[in-house]
Image 1 (cartoon, one colour):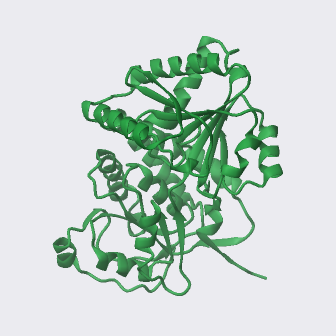
Image 2 (tube, rainbow, N blue to C red):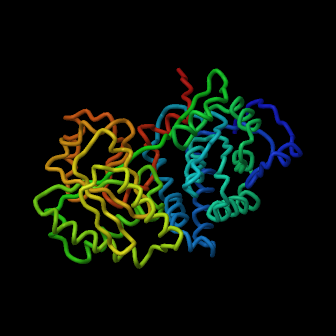
Image 3 (cartoon, rainbow, N blue to C red):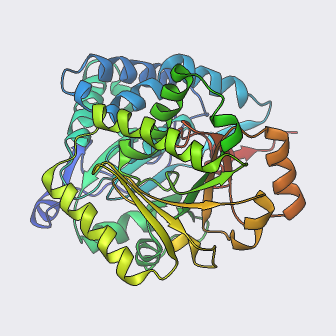
Length: 408
């Protein structure tokens, strides 16, 4: 383990005064590096997966179960095999993670990216007190205390609100910042300068969409339809469409669109009604958003409700501001397209993920290459929108978060 000579400042009293709380770690700045996919890191993540699966509170949170499944040791070792290289690589050093306020488990994925690539990490979690954050930090603290004390200096998780001094201090000392959030969040963080060789990795607010082949959908049996609906549910309702990779607009292709819509949304409604907790406050906010959309959007053709679980809004046409159409809690926009080529002029660099069903991969590849689209960094089947990996928003994180030592 390589430790750089970064000053350690004990300012506990100041941190307390400014409402900064360490959920994991201590109020000291460490800058340690390891080779990527070091055994101790892989073992730690495997144990974290087990710990989360055993936690009685975690069973109430599908997003934690998904995290536990993703960071299981078998999965991490499969990534290790993919990224095996003869190059000499080490982590950059200290990574400062600023994570989004609306996705409770995002901080854990960001932390894992930093750890696997051999870096020390200071992670700022949302100021809102999500119970998922508490559960995950509790598991990490337990492992660091009992089995992985060596990693204690590589993991700090903090919560604070508007503490500019801390943000400035860590920004000056870190080797890279990972910033998740909207454009304003990114600009606000960029006000704090980095050292000359440090850099930002930004995951800005992005827009995602879904395309379904109606001709193929009407052919599937009830079991396949149920499975497709559950996968669509996972892409959207698990995070209330807050994730950048969750689709907001559904593009329908084929000649059986009316029938396919009827079959699909009825099935999705059955899944949502059996799994989703629609609180009174969410129900009211959802209806308010629908009314607001009706008043401001002159491009609406038709609205259909499936009880209060799903609202679909059919559009008259596509326009350049398509990425501003945002659904939440099960509000989806729809548009019928004869060919994906019709949407090429509307896709800009704000577009991240295209989920699909009933289309061949070869046609999707042709669509991307032929049109040289300015956006879309991921194309995955329905059900994999939230499957985060080392290729994200066009970055190869395994390479970006490590440095190469050239030995001749």
